[in-house]
Length: 139
Image 1 (cartoon, helix red, strand yellow):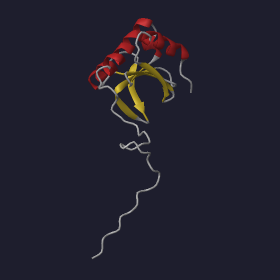
Image 2 (image 1 turned 60 degrees about the vertical axis):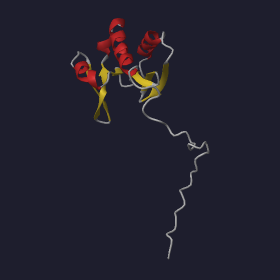
Image 3 (image 1 turned 180 degrees about the horizontal axis):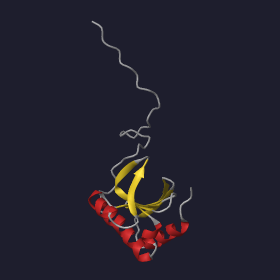
Image 4 (image 1 turned 180 degrees about the vertical axis):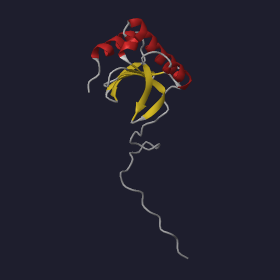
């Protein structure tokens, strides 16, 4: 399912002054990363996903056109889905993007998850072989 290109372009325009923004196609949509952290995503299912953080989550859910973001039937605390009516105007979209940016800039740099680079800490490539079993010493 394709995401809404017009909304993606609007988000791009709002974030264009920032140098720390990257776009990634994730979860059936186009995700905007700020400082390496997911800020918001134009969803392939319609709407905008915004990362507001756990503290602002309940407050955001109380707003019109906002619902809990779910992934495989489970709520994603800290993320909300904003229906298109919730960001019809540029001012409303700017408000939601600002909420996402305001939260992710508080996160530690580099993200919380590290990907395996394919190399050990020593810099040597990882082996695909299972480690050899040690034999028990017999007396």
